[in-house]
Amino acid sequence: MKAEIVETKDNTAKILLEDFKVSMVNALRRSIINGVNTLTIEDVKIYKNTSFMYDEILASRLGLIPIKTPIELKGKGKFSFKLKEMGPKAVHASDLVPSDKDVVPAISDMLIINLKDGEAIDLEAETAWGNGADHSKFTPAHVFYHFYPKITIPNSKVKGAAKIASLCPVDILDGEKDTLSVKKGKLSDCILCKACEDYAGSDVISISSQNDKMIFEIESWGQLSVKEILNEAVSTLEEEVKEIAEKI
Ligand code: SF4
Image 1 (cartoon, rainbow, N blue to C red):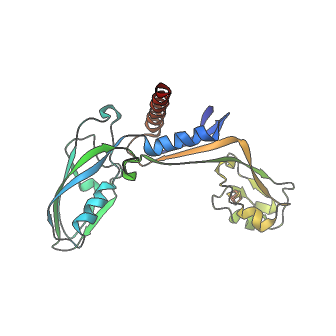
Image 2 (image 1 turned 180 degrees about the vertical axis):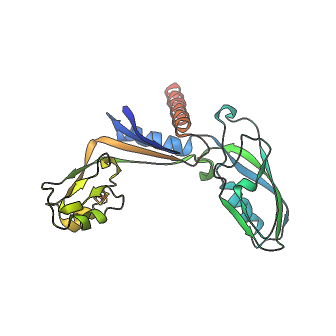
Image 3 (image 1 turned 90 degrees about the horizontal axis):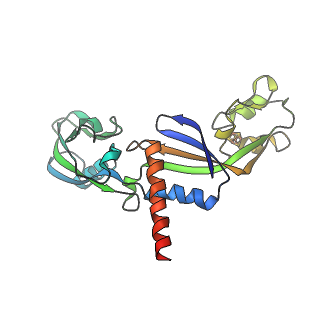
């Protein structure tokens, strides 16, 4: 399988795949979702909660905050956070006081609770290691793939090209001066929704896919970098294949 990173932005990566088997690509996707270990808040001791939110909901919200997981720790140790706040205050993930400066919320402005005047919370939360097979809160990324798009515009001079371009949800079409084209370098962003073709007809713009190329997209939730996620997912896959081979 050939892989080329065609775009990286903050926590996302878009990878062009060739010479692939769909089953292998899907195995990698599943390994990212279920086979990468991360840290997440698991146990919460609530000493005081006079807010409108039930203890269980508060604990559940804490569990959904992505926690930065230094790769060198891999499976080792427990970490904790303290949270003691009084309203009126919008309490964010950044208000959690960590026991380790490297194990902190990945999205600091994630809202936990809006405390009203006089409401108070006082709690301690402890992390656990796990992967997406244990619970989806451990999953490190949103990951998906689709075949590479093919857009055919037989005649670029199209009356109403601007209207057709405006229908594209990912804004990759140019329709200025009644001339329809795909914006430079944007072809791989096409999500094959066919909104343009449905409106204008396949004689004006035709959408299909190239089944020998695939776009694989990963959006990290912030626990690990995209590179770390890929490395971990591949080594999990290798271990699983080795285990199966030994059992045969
Ligand atoms: S198929 Fe959808 S995403 Fe692709 S160019 Fe047409 S409108 Fe845009």
